[in-house]
Length: 253
Ligand code: PEP
Image (cartoon, rainbow, N blue to C red; front, side, top):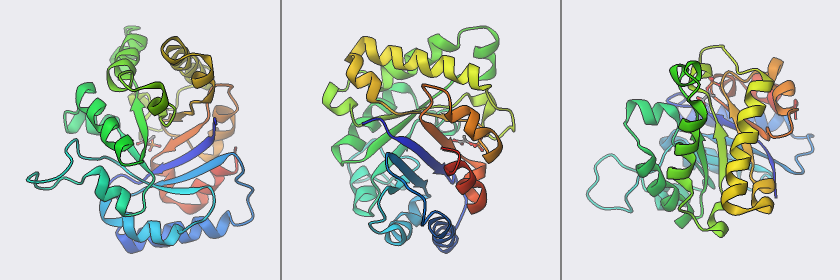
């Protein structure tokens, strides 16, 4: 089923206690909101997963995600956190391939393909990020870049596994910059991505995949963006750190 999803990516912010306080505030503010057909996701640092998942408990429609996972299953990989460990903390999703992981930690599409497998193997829904840098947009190669990110990172999956994937389109030039893709620019890329999925997996899977927009989404621009036919929600950085702003975006659905 194609859900509307509002996912926060807290990045390297919040201690476990601050995370629990933030979630408690958000849950209080949305306690009367009808979340049918919607998923709210908190993408927390690894060290907060357990505490935040305990705070969320079984709240319907609310989930916890990691911001990364290891491409290894376990063993002598100092500093890594496996999909299995993340799942055991109570997370149900994992953000994979965020542009900051691609840029600062050199994660390639091939590495991300393995991470997608690891996530699915541990019952974590991958939120797979793709998106072009400003130069790709300016020289009009952004569709080719996005197509490779999706094909090389995800298209090895079986149809059954792909049906569990969420895609986030995040133009890198709009992340944390205050610059947002226009609803029309974002819609064009979302439709392009949905079409890629359709060519590979068929119309039904393409209709059901949730494709989120990320890049300076705020309460003031969320309604217009999420109102576009192929934009199914948002992956939100900065504005997910303030309960009122995050809830403002949730209320824009
Ligand atoms: C992000 O990092 O995924 C993001 C979209 O950040 P921001 O909302 O701050 O642009």
